[in-house]
Image (cartoon, helix red, strand yellow):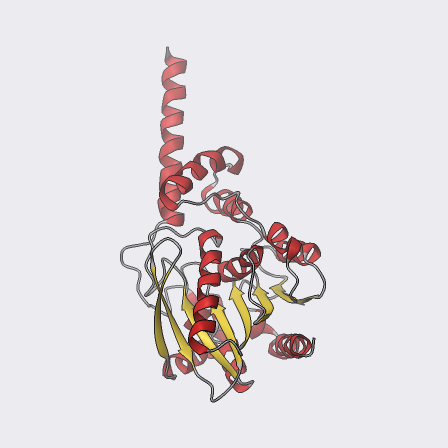
Length: 311
């Protein structure tokens, strides 16, 4: 009898832990708004904090055309489009988990402006000015990429050359989007420090931050994801998505990343079809490759863009 009571208590505690983990990890916080910098950012960015602050300020100082679109599941999504003269080149930028475009692209944004790109800065679902309650770690977000693509072409013309870049979960988002048919306008994909599947990164976070065994956690957690988010953590991986993708992909990652291991990017790179490119930045932490070695990443960008345009 005592044994059954103990087992019952353990099961109750386990299910409570899974529910808490689900709400902490997947559910949008009620008080989330466009707060560019959060507690701990200054310590995290260290010597690069001022550069990030200046880059974010530059992004916020620009004039944008605001757009609202409907997602495949009825959410209103928000994005800002920066016109750059009469340029025919557009890059779509997708930020990371519980982050925003101003911070994630504080380094590279001006580089793209200076190199003649129009820029679509997207608020991913469940973030900032876009609707949504459940973050799906790139699964449903990857469908939004296609919706934004169709909208940009319809709004700004079928003569646009389009590049798509994402950072962190944004990188996973754009890589997962390669499983869908893309218009010929898409010239290349840039993925900076993305994880290769929701399952693998969630397992890592659960073990590293919550001391929860992923083998036991994932099946129960997936039931909650299907019930509340209408997606499966097993649904997609970058390796599977890239299997039939025929456009160039540039992978970027810092070897010092202790949140998303750079080996995940290497795995995606190895699975991708040619032409493909990879830029690993020695010692760079998560999302900081551009800041740590700006010349190397800028050269990777420039070489990649030139290659795509001259194909």
